[in-house]
Picture 1: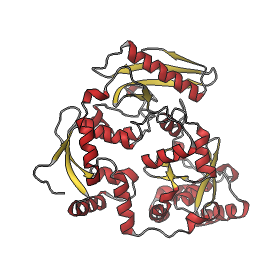
Picture 2: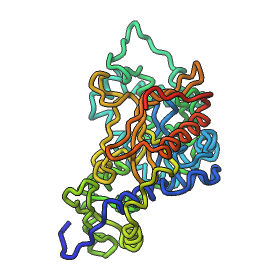
Picture 3: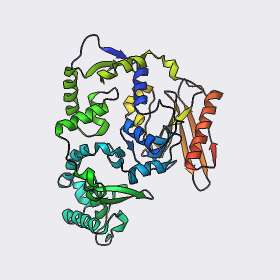
Picture 4: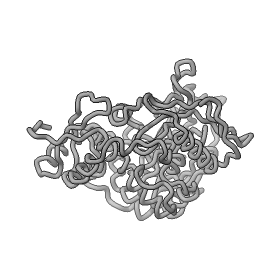
Amino acid sequence: MGMRQGMTTIPAAAARRALLEAQGLLDAPDRRASPATLQRLVEQMGYVQIDTINVVERAHHLTLFSRLHEYEPRMLAHLLERKRSLWEHWTHDASAIPTMWYPHWKHRFERYRGRIQRHAWWRARLGHDPERTIAMVRERIERDGPLQSRDFEHDHANHPLPEDGWWGWKPAKAALEHLWRGGELVITRRINFQKVYDLTERAMSELHALPPTSAAEHVDWACRSAMERLATPGEIAAFWHAIDPPAARRWCEEALRRGELIEVMVETADAGKPRRAVALSSREAALRRLSRRSDRDGLTDSGAMRMLSPFDPVLRDRKRCQRLFGFDYRFEAFTPGPKRRFGYYVMPLLQGEHLVGRIDPKFHRDRGELVVNRVWWERGIRPTKARTNALSEALERLAGFIGADRVRIERA
């Protein structure tokens, strides 16, 4: 993208507000929650990442609870399993995604189907005859209906599994995942968080029958839907992981020529060098409105506090989080214990529009206790009585949500 004179400069605070607004974190969290409210929220966010770690609660439930305090997990289950206005598939990771975008996933299905021929990793897990294993799994589900991985036996004595931790899948499990990622199977529900697979043409027949979008339509959708936020071409491509950065760059250049985008310079929270980005022309007035607010307007010690899941979209891009919030966050669950700066499952604290601290919590289900091992406040953030009260109230809300009887802070 070419530079131009007189480019609009966006303060870091305005860019931060634009991100929080797009991700539903400027809306009142105590508003009424319902499946319809939840559907609109997920459509606004784009998707919600699903993760297995359950130190406090599953990541997707924490992400939604931080935006809707009346949220209940059964609401998400209703949209995924009964109404099917959301479905589970892949963005940068497993996610709950609005089914209205299903035709765009057909491009992703094609890419995944080719991986069995190209990647030794898949072939090692599918066994000595991958095509036969895949056909067997497909035929079994076609005959018997929805099944889990546990419904397929494996001869461990004669066919040992690869020894690489979480990914030591038996061939049938690898086939299920391959067929799911390739669009032939769909996850209809989960039992104790274990996936239940069925044929897509049976469980989601109308969507399965839709033709794929054209390549041009797909690129336009991937870029335009990601452009509800200030972004660079690289960030646009990374939002869905549906197209590559060169395709996003070409789309941006064409949209700039058509006048649909404007180029801007975005300042950083640490007064570093401004960064070039693009924004929708239709958002220019909104960006000016967000820019007019003082940065102090979003920093309060008495406002409600939210605890963000480590997998919250606001935290996904570590560099962006550092630029806009001045907050350096790394998820350390996969870091060896002695090398962790903070903890295994650290949740950042959002108050107003600022990340003011972080906590290291754990829900001890056997004794019904939510324990906060430590609280860290960011540099320049004072733990005033109002702020610590806001944290206590947030912890009590979280305890009520996850079913903890009490809260204990080990070290503040």
